[in-house]
Image (cartoon, rainbow, N blue to C red; front, side, top):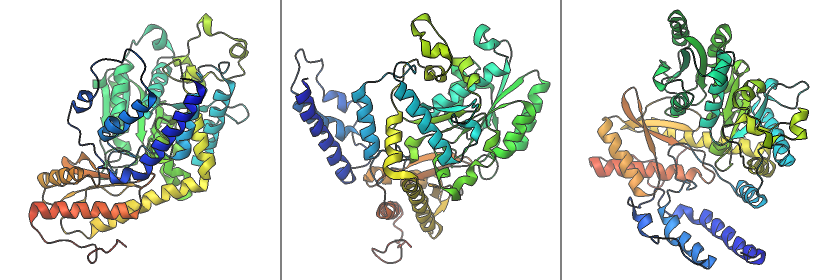
Length: 488
């Protein structure tokens, strides 16, 4: 494709994206596509000769967009948001256009140094300990952008494994049983990381939770003591700040003290909720973070940066490099040999890496810290608005205490009615919810914080739930206040 043709089609693609974002609200949130229907719309084989690019764009509109579940829809409340925003999209576009492969400092100095700098910005914005920053005199820690929090957890676990075995496991393999601990509500990536790291997923110690679904520190301490008595070497604890099921916040300070006393690696997974700490009034979620050996947060969940972008910090970078560093002859260069630069290939699983820092840099510069804080606060206000409506509803109830921008709820009549509500709302196209199990009962999850979500979309969800309840029960309508009234 000649450059001038690229310029023309590039403008057309930006126009398509802008049109999509401005009209996505008119589409059903969840794709109505049946399994196999997308492939059935595509040619059986590849074209033997190139096609006009206009035809490709036509097929995006005809086949791809109708086959999407629209994560940027203002009525998307399922899972957690996968935020995007215009400056982040432009940063992703520039990253692709520059075509940088930033595995070494030498392969693109700006790629590495901008990333290090923006991660220090993020550490300041979140109020993280100085030990995680790379710009302090004599710094031994620092930050790196991973693809997802799952990768961050795996990297932290590998470093903890090798520290617990004095480095022997990375050279010779495991020769002992290691204790890995996480709340029973911790993310499934902990279990997957154990399988990949050769620790055995069945060896995960799932620590019981309290009435708010947060880890019980005393139960953790008992598990560590029991393991030591059984010849197991306690190695790694994952504390969660904002669990996926309910938004529960593990008591990091108490957990951290146990880790310090027992020489355990403490990883704090704040993938979703961590972004809230850019607001001073929510920074209490980080109480005890000074005990952490590693920490991660996903700007692509709640900070207007498109997927994928996970910020991951370690207290001691050497722990990570010992586990992940390999230096073949073909990657040797003067800058690496000098020891004066960071080579991020040694901070992650793959060798190659994209220029992800651009979209994070663009977003922070476009909105500023105050603009990002307002977005976080708006998500919390939206959740409070919905929780207030629930509190006055005669047949719906909270299934867990509201947590920042997450509200879990259910039907008082039981799981069958709760499932019926979920199906009806998701089939309506107006909104999209997801589910979980809390205390053995079905619960619906409503996560706010989408880029384009406003009060009117919270009201539309309430109305959709109300319609679903009436259609399935024949009961009278529970009005917001009066027909057409808005929530307080």
